[in-house]
Length: 108
Image (cartoon, rainbow, N blue to C red; front, side, top):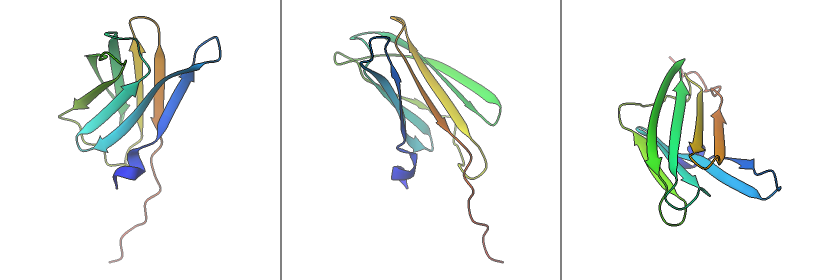
């Protein structure tokens, strides 16, 4: 099931080089991993699901990565979409959009 949530979205720098990435590694609780940010860069993570926004800060480690969890948030991908963005203090950006899935309806 974890593989279903391991979609990655990338942004590009103006130079055309690969930019930061953001991916979801868990839906309960929602856990995001960011890579490609600057060493020690402060990153603002914003997540929207079911019309409600959640935000927090993380600090990239020495290789420009971070992992952060929204402990109180669980996302049922059959009933909700999810959008997340990470914006670093140095201007680096990554986005992730996961639309609501068309899950099969259980048999009676």
